[in-house]
Image (cartoon, rainbow, N blue to C red; front, side):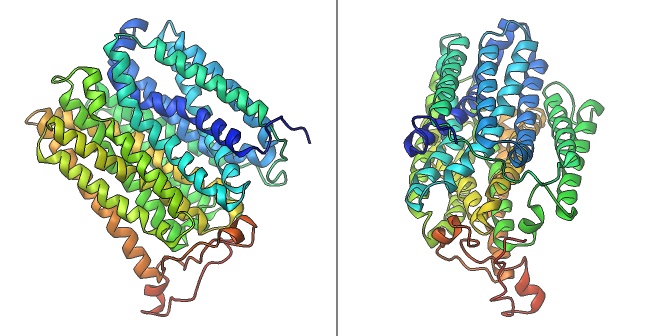
Length: 497
């Protein structure tokens, strides 16, 4: 097999993954203070810019599903090179955009390629190296998603302060180019995962239709009423199609995604519920509270007020790396939900928050975000066979993208249009977010209790060796269905297969 000069070198491969995922995720979080500047430069209004973000996020969500299908039938490292090439081209097109059409094309391809790379590159990084490297992989994974997002407001504020946006986008293009160089240097030819598996056109089609429709509808809320047909019809219709996708994959004889095994096993269900509610709850704690302060502070000052969120995310990423081989891994998401609820509550004490409270609340919220979604993803994946990890990542990221990116415009719409003004609307949204965070801590505990599941030290050597799940996961609500106490010992050891 053909290999690059740095093939198998873990630091180079991890750096490639980090650089490949940062551009889109960091830009998505940095766009808020830059939107008006970009729109003025390329001749786009508020609705056009909102639609641009909506379609890019839809592409990110769809890519998680398509990436699994492509990995089954195409040489995985070769096709990953194609993803990186298109990511570089997309970054160049976006940075040099002279019209909203060019900007949209670049952003959509950026989102699409980022999710393709996430599903194609991260699971092999986790499975292709010894357990000792898994600790670093967990840190890289957490910082790719949440570190980049947490740094976004400060980066965007810096550019907005300079009344410019293209330098940031050109820097992002250089980062993508560096990821491409490392992808070539670390190239290690790998065969398709399962060339004999069927091509699931319905799953891909449902994901595409559902995500595009739902995100289109939510983006229309920037200038339309919630019950306006152009917003509510595609929004509700798209969500219905996504539900149909989940039901179809749970009942299909040869599904593309391992939804059936995940939805019938207690620990993966608990992890998915927690990740979804954490993503939804966090929306009110960051974007909305920042909106209440835009008229008080300069873009750079405001971005720096939310920079402690990056420190919190980094802290929990390091903690995740330390506990990923221990029983404490299954406790970390629950602790993270507590911090997320506390961070939202701190923001709610005073709307708009003072400088000191914003600094404290953003740090606590960063801890909560870093300690919830990424750890829950690993907790869910370890409860199934290692061969399912790529599909687990795809399912969780698809649902997280829908929960986070789709709910944000809805929350913003209601906050801006509630009687009493923006501050009152944000205050209500914060209470909703707080309730979601509490629910995200309670429901997984009830699932564990009702199923007879218990936190256990993961057998990662056996997991990476393909012997089975890292720990047993009882069938969903087995204890309740069989009578108190009788659900113990009925473990799912085959990952639902």
